[in-house]
Image 1: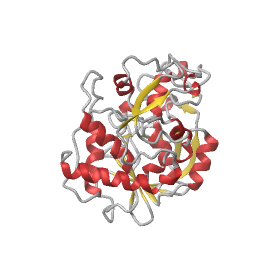
Image 2: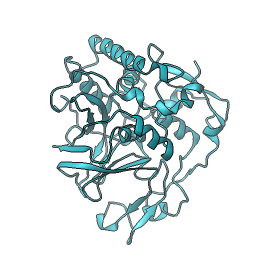
Image 3: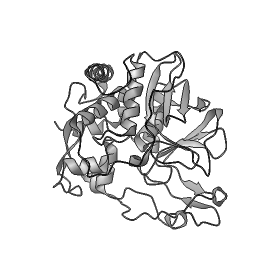
Length: 355
């Protein structure tokens, strides 16, 4: 199966992440999780085919496991438990009943948009072939990105480090999984066929395309930031769950806010300005510095500004750490999840912070 036409149809890339008519509780209830947040699994650990399949189906059903990596980590467990709770299933391991319900829901959601995409992902294999296109390797790339914001601000843009990073992000995968599935692939060579996760690719991050898609997308009535559960949830006007996203929330230096805020604006491909008053660990800047846009910008590909100054929901340059590391006070999602959520919100959308 080739995904060439599938990728070209990026205008509905986020559509498969909308969950329709799920049996969500009448009010937010935290998913029954939790193992403590930990560092990402080492890349040497084996890929679990059953987990990989469940991760792909969770993405199709609207419950993001963060990066698709084929490993039984915290983000996968939490997304699975949230799916089980929303569907009236016993919360726990990946059992046969959950697997069957996952397949049914992911197929139902896929079929609802089947006439909008050239290649459906419903009833399709977990993996698919993709031919690397000239645009995938055209760059520019930023192979070396400093950690210090003062040095980072000297770069003309915060591009992907390599074609491999760009391709992994497009298909919501960890670079480790992409490399493991394609051990001999030259990711910098146009025409190379690689194996990728068979999911709708990341929503188009181009500001004009993203804004146009957002105007047509179904809207959330409210967003819940569940601090304890390291998750962001979007609900429609009937209190049905539209999307579940793992998140890094707050830090010791700048804790996340509490109570209810509102969305003030959505900024695609944003700059990032660091204020030394925040005193983030490891930063040496003595005056404000502005980092240029790009997927490896500290706030990723989109910034959803909230009504409390300096706080927002945003993307991330390091998707493998989302849900497993602190976020300097804000709410950090993977770039693809942040772009998906950005389509769901408007100025004035309510954002509830739940402890």
